[in-house]
Length: 324
Image (cartoon, rainbow, N blue to C red):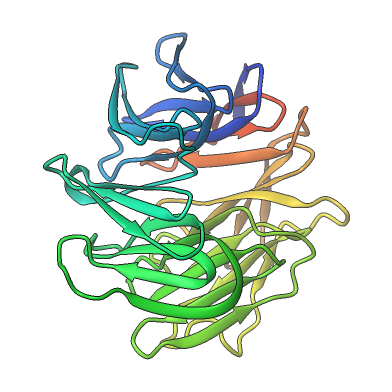
């Protein structure tokens, strides 16, 4: 039976993650908490807006209302990587060789491993940033589409157009597709080889959480009363194919998803705090956590796929050990 080690915090959890095997929780008030032989915490920002782990999973990268991008190590030591004055850092992404990208207003920045900052300006506000799997390109989600930049080169960016507000961005693990979340209740995607469009619609709510399966064959998403899981194994992605629906629960909305690091299983969490583990092959479900105080906002597996860390809008966070 799975066991839950709870951690009750005071505030909205923006991101829950494992950093070097240690559970981390980044809160909207700017505090970063960790469970490392007891509960420890530090104030990293004056208001925290975005968080991710770096490629080696050795640091938590955060952006805040204070215009700072900060890296917090496993031992809790924090270092400021970039400062852009009185601007909000609304999105952060991690790349290879300690590279990071972040966004504020109409600009995206890339900080290369030598510490140099490179700025890319756009006509409208940048809503999301992501590195391609090899780290050669960064993708910028913006109004009416995506811009792909090559930070290490001086070439012209690639523009991928689709009308509407694109709020987040992710590359498929094989680098063949780029997918955005949208302000409307939909995803949009492009096949990068030929620019073909992929429309993924029909959601009753905005998609706020996406997660690729271990080998990149599936993309799990929130925004419905089940986890909607799109097939990406074929060369044209999900077009003309029906998605899987995992963990259907009537009137309860899925708010967060996290695919297992090795198996075709996804953790599926809901607006009442419940978390299920669902298997793609037969839709079998296992209860990982009963209802809580608030909607689950973030989840992540550890490298072995034995533990799942989660955070919620109500501050009731914790770690699920699936081995019990």
